[in-house]
Length: 373
Image 1: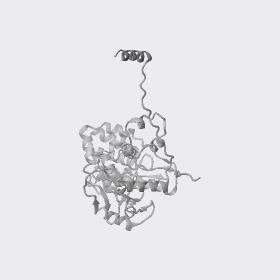
Image 2: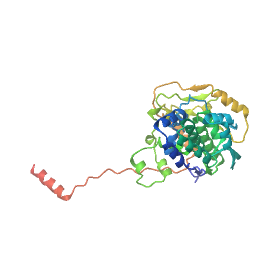
Image 3: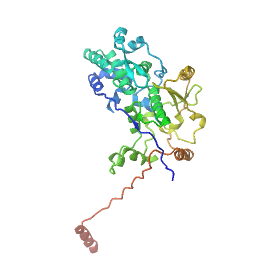
Image 4: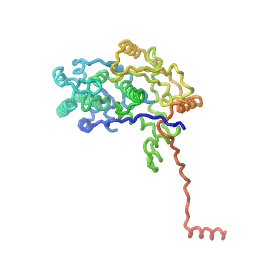
């Protein structure tokens, strides 16, 4: 008998070490923190902790229209650009530059964590907030948002930092890493922003009842497989008023450039999370995929992506109603049957109705009272 489960590789994630960054952020005044949020969004919140651009932007407190996306894959940022973004001199910043062994790329250029933390501590003591905020933000970009070589902030993360809008690159790295692992059926480390992924995932999960208390002692995958459609928090009202990016340029969906490669994502598969109904099976033309893998060169495609982000197509505002209609639900069921799930379905035990017990003495007393009526 054929298995109904799909065999998938085991993926691991690395929890970023952020204690030193927390310590630096705790030394900030309230005004300094407010200025930090104005310049870099809510990325410090990650130290205490199908995804969409809009959901990631909301979690990080970023406005997708404030800055263009990162499109500098394979390019090294100039030292003048880096020093300007850090509000420091080029000579000082240049002195920090070093090469670090990278198992994937051979060598990575960038700055060590220790050098940046030492500089941040010195700026904190002087209350020189503008460069302090910039150096702290760069540490978060390199160690939390776009981790690669341990305890090292490489040029890829620095390039996104200079661009000013991390959201498309964050989504790109997540989808790219998942795609590469799934395509090659490879075990190993999932390179993405783990705190952001965790924050996004838990925002859709039940927050009370047996899912949280877990009286049956189920493992996480069993708890997830026991969820039904009605258990999911599909939409947050915090996204009310948010315009949804449907596609860019001539692409049928949204092209994303990350720190490792390029990939597209399909907003039509996430309408329900953004407050809109899933009416029918998505048009296949809207689900066309492409991927540009790390190390591959395709200047024409990169130029096309850059141009496309200058022509963003958004969904017209309509009434919110995050439901799934039968035609779409059947399409999902057909895909599950064809692709199979990595775990067995778990049937959640039905909670028994509470039984009211009355002591025998009280029962006899009640009988006596009734007989006297």
